[in-house]
Length: 76
Image 1 (cartoon, helix red, strand yellow):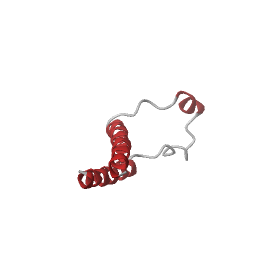
Image 2 (cartoon, rainbow, N blue to C red; image 1 turned 180 degrees about the horizontal axis):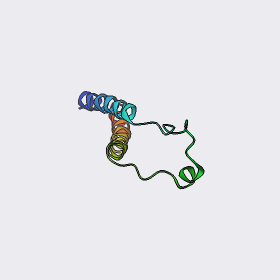
Image 3 (cartoon, helix red, strand yellow; image 1 turned 120 degrees about the vertical axis):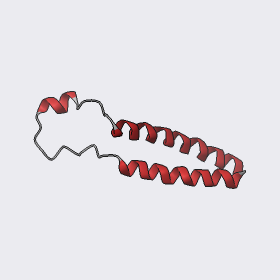
Image 4 (cartoon, rainbow, N blue to C red; image 1 turned 45 degrees about the horizontal axis):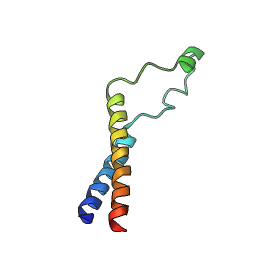
């Protein structure tokens, strides 16, 4: 049981790293002068692939935390 959970944990870790690397950075548009309204009001909500990657990251992070605690409890 513990070995299977550790394997799943490693797969989730690799997937989480990959998903985070695929996301665009928060400072993607800071190099250009874009005006104050965009910085105050913020850009429009993330659309398309950015929104999907954000949701997948949240799910994978939650799974990572739960599995880490579970594996630590089982191994102990």
